[in-house]
Image (cartoon, rainbow, N blue to C red; front, top):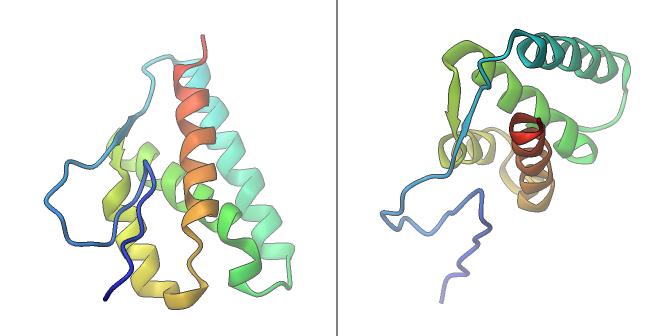
Length: 110
């Protein structure tokens, strides 16, 4: 029996569900804040000597924000699957979900 792993932000059971979407706000101030946050996160990641498994929240944040800035929106299942393929057992769905929630909260914040 396989284990089905689900959170609001990622799924790995192959079900044909619609992925949650995070959309980049149109306000220039928010876009600039995401760019600054991304630069800070990448700087922190580059200075760190910890294993990727110990930085899944930071790595998730970086990938989500990069795609958000590049495409204007992200489908979280797609990023989760990409991370799972890259990091295997080191991928942490809880850390990924925390990053999704933080980014979504900032997008919705007035």
